[in-house]
Image (cartoon, rainbow, N blue to C red; front, side):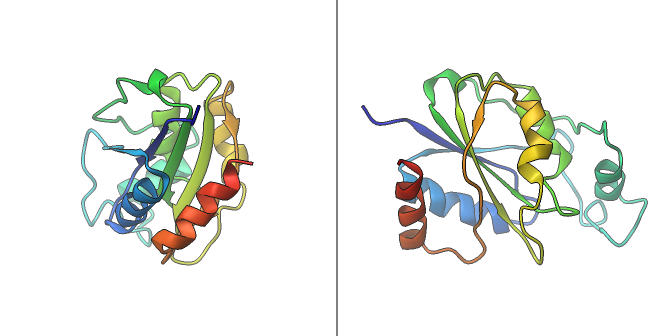
Amino acid sequence: MSKKSLVAYFSASGVTKRAASLLAKAANADLFEIQPKEPYTRADLDWTNKRSRSSLEMTGFASRPEIKNRVENLSDYDVVFLGFPIWWYTAPTIIKTFLEAHDFSGKEIVLFATSGGSGLGRTESALAPCAPNAVFKGGKLLNGASEASLKSWVESLKG
């Protein structure tokens, strides 16, 4: 029996959305966009402004931006590919909100990200406490990935 997969992603500028769409196709997975209750503006995303919304969220350890939507049928999935842009060397805090809003018990979570300059770093260890009964597996930057390379990566995770 093959495992049913979901690609859940947050994308602020469209880059992660493109990667998530390719990954969903390569993995034959359903696609789910994590949406903030209050959409981010260009000013909100200005990481050079220490008072911008994203800067305040990323420097506030307890920050949990509200999400607009939930995966209603999460129990249908065995594997959740969870994608996001790298902000301040880790996942945006909205990803913690998403993880804490769902029960990932017994699920495999595979992280993927897009980044302008840094890797995943310690993202997995930062997110794992938000889904304590899940199994985190793998993790990859998908900058410029092709569908063929994504199919190969997905196959490598099945072992």
